[in-house]
Length: 195
Image (cartoon, rainbow, N blue to C red; front, top):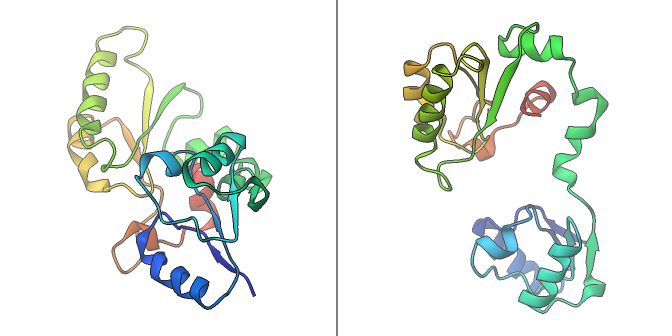
């Protein structure tokens, strides 16, 4: 038996894995993002039997910051982002434009937003950018798409949508019944649209 933690940066997994580790159940974890080891403060991860990381840099951080021996670390790449290179999730320009409500014959600018916890004033920044673009003769006729972060509070973008009615705001998917976006179960089309 091997218990695999897929989101150890979320503290609700900690008691489960501490219990499994105390019972002698082998455990492994995948470090989900390039910055998780350095931007979230100390994480109690040193008890795992095995670690999976994206690259050599992250492996070095585990070794240096957490004292994890290199032989307990595997470099796997970014499995949660495999859909970006899955042929079934790569749409044509025509289909992408249709799904987003864009004119496929005109250029567009896609802005990929962050989430509120990291960039709370981002909608104001984007609004200022859009105002500046409207005054530029070469950019004012561009189609604008704001692709929201799946974990964002989508409602914070409402003022931008109200002020710039021609801007398309793409919500990755609707949250699950609990209301938390982390519990959403996106369809294959949702994942493709996000990409």
